[in-house]
Length: 106
Image 1 (cartoon, one colour):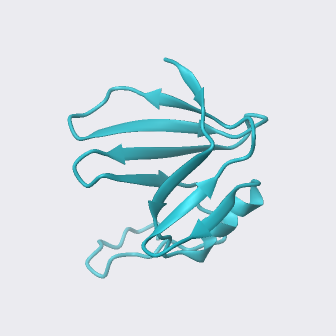
Image 2 (cartoon, one colour):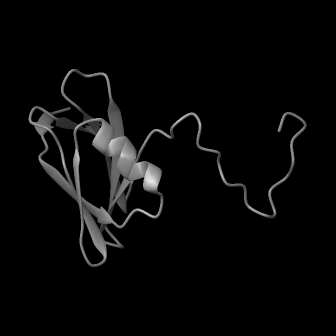
């Protein structure tokens, strides 16, 4: 697995404000444009491909300088879009779907 530098990533616009806050907290720049968002990573950020690859998607781990913070993004070949997965802040509640099954530990 090759580890390569990454400077920026273009994704769809973020609906959740906490996502932008997480990125900015870790030194990333977030620029919103018409229908997309460009994320600028700090110098020294790297990406490594995660295997296995699928027919429609490849996934990468993004490691910020210092190695303490890791994000994952997927490149969807069919929709031609990058999907960024971020760690959710502890205090942000997860929205439940109206048809979700209630568990006893909820």
